[in-house]
Length: 124
Image: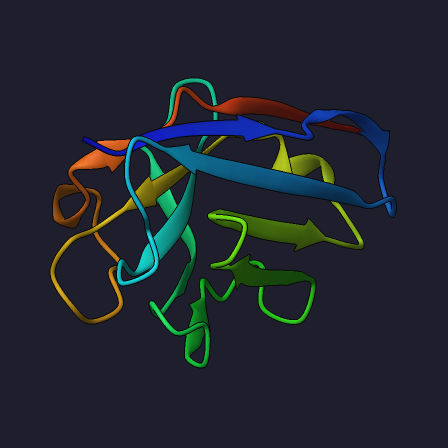
């Protein structure tokens, strides 16, 4: 059973940067594609970014493309989300997730393992 814990959220001004980290325990995520999702108040959880098990292939939502970077360190069992040029509309709870099936994942239902989330607030 994989257990995921996010960290690195906080309050930042528009244009600023944050680096989110997702640490896995209870099992290795080396082979698992990983994803970051976010949920703003009153909205559905939405896809942000995904990365293959090897870390070679990544994909992003159009809203964050060019500003966010997903990466992973399989030796440390961690996944990172580097967020730059943050906007107020990026404010949300960000959660990392792991999927067992191969291939990138863009949908919530594809991921059986989830962290509790970390709050990101971007002020204007």
